[in-house]
Amino acid sequence: DIQMTQSPFTLSASVGDRITITCRASQSIGDLLAWYQQKPGKAPKLLIYKASNLESGVPSTFRGSGSGTEFTLTISSLQPADFATYYCQQYSSKWTFGQGTRVEIK
Amino acid sequence: QVQVVQSGPEVKKPGSSVNVSCKPSGGSFSSYIVNWVRQAPGQGLEWLGAIIPTVDVANYAQKFRGRVAFTADTSTMSVYMQLSRLTSEDTAVYYCALRYDDYVGYWGQGTLVTVSS
Image (cartoon, rainbow over all chains, first blue to last red; front, side, top):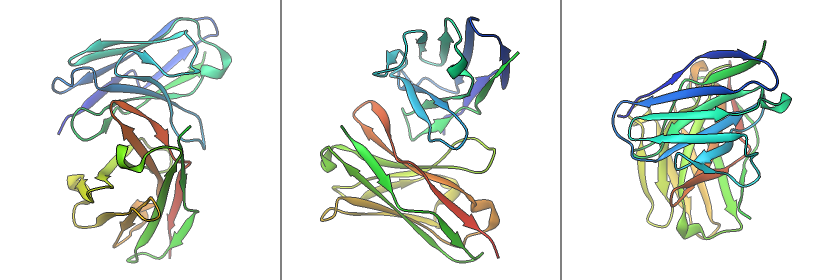
């Protein structure tokens, strides 16, 4: 099975900061990678699919990139609503999720 | 606009089984692969498996094989997950999530399953 390694586990940042979250797959998954945002008590919300496609309604401050085994999610200017937990997910073979990155206020 | 509606919360005894339903609406039932994902309290997301409803073919994660079963009812356009031999470690929110081609953005609201004696 494909393993997904996401880093960092926790990220402390301020409003307006640029942040990057990384996800590494144990084998090539092409571009079949998604990024989700999750807030407490809510279902995951899709941000990015197929590695770099922005979901409708998601601010353009979110950007996904990468292919093969290395992927990144970048938030160019952190907003108050962006403090949440983020997960990567491969859907090339079955589904596997990263461990999650909690973005907290510094 | 596709919406995914799941059944309500459940409280179960250890050793029993639970059934959770998932009903997509607003799209073609024949176009989706229905996946099941769970999240234990304070933990990450874990995939249980998937089913292609129109051909009733399922693929289960190794961890749950033999204990989970997915079924589809094309007359009601609903999919069902049954998890048996429940323990307290199965306490979690269970999500139904659709894959449509390379798009994975249709998720249900989640169903809380609590296993407690």
